Image (tube, rainbow, N blue to C red):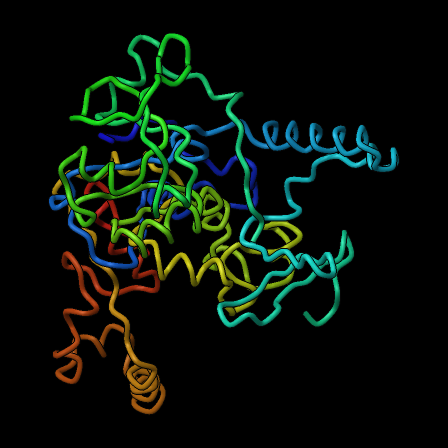
Length: 378
């Protein structure tokens, strides 16, 4: 639990419709490094950084990795009696996305909002008119990295086989792992933390005791909204950082470039955007905002921020205030800039400014910019 390894910044090569000159290049340089903020957090107060392994520190080759898992499961199903016709199916990375609800009664895939209302529904490959995929992991096909130094040297504490979300509750017995054989040593481990030692099992309470810290001192980074973020936040009060790789694609299709049309929605995949359906927020997006203090497309974006950085959350304003703004703009022809410079807005000016810049249409992006990109063009 120390720091994040370096990685290659995300790119938008698969999306040729994004103009990569002028504004486009400037935007991409920002959105690929930014950490978005739901609740204010000071890195200076963080004593320990925790990281999930799969899809957080270990970034698998996609879609090759998922395709391999699909084929293994498909072949296994045929071997135990399922019809051979399913062998003709191949993995489609655009269907489905994560963040969906599985209807186990009728076999439907549902994209719902925070209130449970159905936004998109599919039965098989057929979409119903009028109208959160669970990811399992293996260990393989890891992108090549530095081999000169043992990966264990980057961490103060390493725990495997944690059986999350049980790890954030009663947990299991903590045992040591023989790093030469990979087998567990006999007996329960009791004692102080030993650097370079790999442990198995345990619980979040044991981790805080070994590190001699409290829950508020830990920033935990993970990719699973339920197993990593929700449980660590609700049960232990840890600070949370959600890794959302899909953000790279979401941000490459911002409304600044594309109109809000059906063509834009289908660009995300057959189920549409992970975070919205039209103007309505999805269940995944509401859980992200509720339980993740920070979120970004990759944990390596932490490298762009100093260890004393203050992540400032955007203000949450009541609807009445926006009606007041709209009334002044329409009735008195007051421009956006003039309003925030007027005496009426003096009391609220601090809400709409940050580091000398006026509040723009992306408050989360503005408040979480890396220091070297502190002059946004949005």
